Length: 288
Image (cartoon, rainbow, N blue to C red; front, top):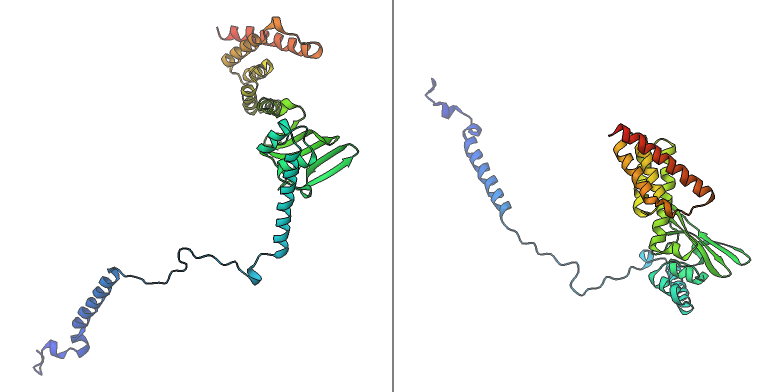
């Protein structure tokens, strides 16, 4: 107590004396709000659409361009007309190709358009007498069939005499019926891989060359010269055991008694045989 007889509690200001009460009250309010937030609330909102409702077609500025809609309708009608004409005049393998959506030798110009689902506007067309060449108007969005993007179509006397595809390994030409078969496609891809392998080997990229040769060997397993290429690359990479085996496989695959190569082909084959035999002798001495 002080000299006036008042206790410390009495000498405090009313604000300080009520602080405890206010803190307790604030805590209670905060707890009540927290509990209210944890409670489940049901929100009653009107649905945007009910089952069975239809979205209205926008009008005015939001509507589709009438000219564009008319153009698209005309293109669809033109494509349908071209396809109908193509199917009405096809026969045999050409009809089968049309159904698959593929180009085929012997097709007419309208059948080419039907197989690629295009019209004349998608092509740059050159006409020189009986010869007609169709090339894509755009490389980014060019014509394609069920096989690949089409690089060129050549017609002679109104019928397809050849066509080319843009593929990941380069341009592939189809000029004979066998070119369009699965075996023909594999052979064309193998040839492309061999060219790439030869270029890589010439530039010193032996790993890249071996990669291309191995892939070509899978596609064309009966070609002994691919095995010879593989053997020479392994030999240059100082992989003697693998090279030795590959040289022997090359000679075994040749079946020398059945070789009927003539002229330059025979000379190249004889040179490869001689080199393979020479390397086998050397490698066997190094790896007894």
